[in-house]
Image (cartoon, rainbow, N blue to C red; front, side):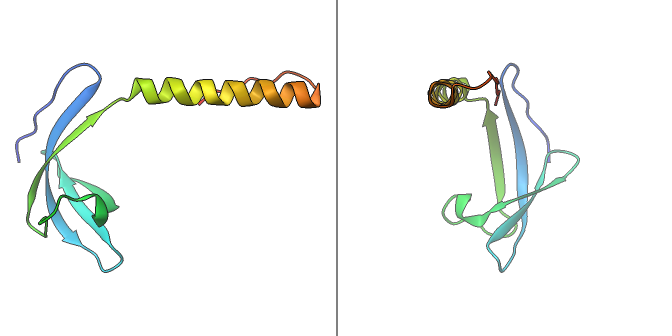
Length: 92
């Protein structure tokens, strides 16, 4: 199972569906080392079954992270105004 990689903030690799368990968990073998990956079978494309070959594309979603950080910061500020207590900074 040859593995393909992309540079930067995304990666691409191949996987095969080893099995789909009764509880709805799909067990994949990913990359050349056949690393076991479990995920909900509902995330598989339509028609995927045991033995199906997949291409996995993973990429960072920096926009979503920034939005979440902004929401957390706004909530922190609101709680600080309400409580008037000491300052604490949380990071995602």
